Image (tube, rainbow, N blue to C red; front, side, top):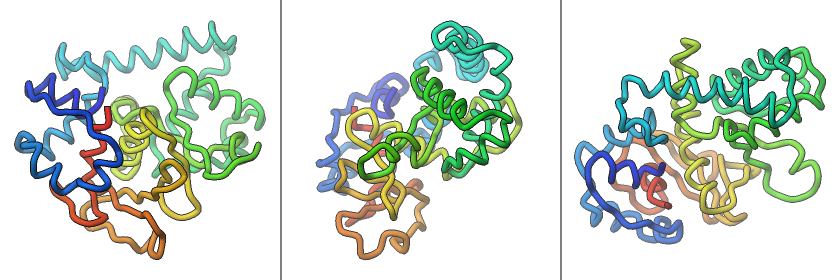
Amino acid sequence: MSFREFLYFTKGEKFPVISLKEIINNHTQLSESLKLPSPLLKIFNEYIHFGYYPFFLEGTKEYFSKLQNIIEKVLFEDLTTVFNISQSKLPAIKKLIWLIASSQPFIPNIDRISKSLGISREYVYHYIDCLEKAGLLLLVRRSGSGFKAVRKPGKIYLENSSLIETISEETGFDALLGNIRETFFANQLNSVTTVTVPPKGDFMINENYVFEIGGKNKDFSQIKNRQNSFLALDGIEIGHGQKIPLYLFGFLY
C-alpha cells in the first residue's frame, strides 16, 4: 500500500496519483495544493511503521504479530516448498534477514556474509535470490550493465519498512532511521520505474536522476556537481528547488 492509499483508508482523503516527473518539476506547488491532513509528518511516520499492509485496519496492536506470522510462513512453508530449501538452512537465512534489517543500509559483501553464515558464496546468492522472489527482499542493482551488475546487487533492503519494524520488534534491535527512509524510497520508486545504485548518491532513477535520502538537514555534499541531482528529505512538509519532501514519493501509485 502506498502512502497515498494509506491516507485514503485512514483519513478518507482521496488524492490523485502523481508522476515522478510532476514531483521533480512541481513538488513545491503540489505540497501546497494537495491540502494534506495535519499533522502530516506524524501520519507519514505511522505509515512507515505499520501502514504498508492493509491488515492494519484490523488493529495496529496486532499488526506486528500478524506480519511476524507471515514472515514465518514464507520461511518455513514457501521457501521449503517452492524453492526446495531444507529446513536446516532456515536459521542461516533468518540470520541473513536480520543482518539486512539492522544495517544502515546493507551493502553486500558476499565473502563476509558467506563466512558469517557458514555457507558458500553460491548459497548466499541463491538465498538472496529466493528471498527477493518471495517478496521479503528488495535488491537494487548497480547502474550500468553486464553480468557483474546483475549478479551482485549494489544494496539490499527488506521489501518495505513495515518488515524492518517487525523484525526490530522481534529481535530487540533499534531500527535505523537511514535504512527505513531508503527502504521507503526504494520500495515506492521500484513499483513504477527503474532504480539503481550510482557511483555517487543513494539512488539513480531511470539512469538519469540521482537522489540522496536523508533528514531535513541533509546537504548536497555527497552529490555536488552532479547534474539532475536531488535530495529526498524526511522531516519537511514543503520543499524548494532540488530539495523534495520524502513523503511525496508515496503518491506515485
